[in-house]
Amino acid sequence: MGYAISRESRRELIEAVGDRYRTGGRAEKRRILDEFVAVTGRHRRHAIRALNRHGVAVSDRSVRVPRLYDEAVRQ
Image (cartoon, rainbow, N blue to C red; front, side, top):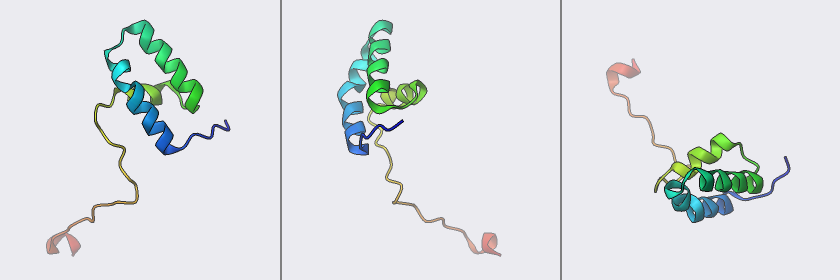
C-alpha cells in the first residue's frame, strides 16, 4: 500500500485515540476507525484490536524468554 508510518508513530496514534475509542459510541468509533485505517493502511480488524487494548504494550520481538526444560524432557 505504500504507507510509511513508523512503529513508534503508530503506537503514539493508538495511545492518543485509544481512550476516546474505548469510551466512544458507535458513530465515534466508526469515525476513529476510518481515520486510523486511512492513516496507517491497516485493516479495520487490526485497528479494532489495537485500539481496544488498554495499557498493553506491544512486545519487543527481539526480547525472548529462554525455554527451560528439565532433564526428563531433554532426553
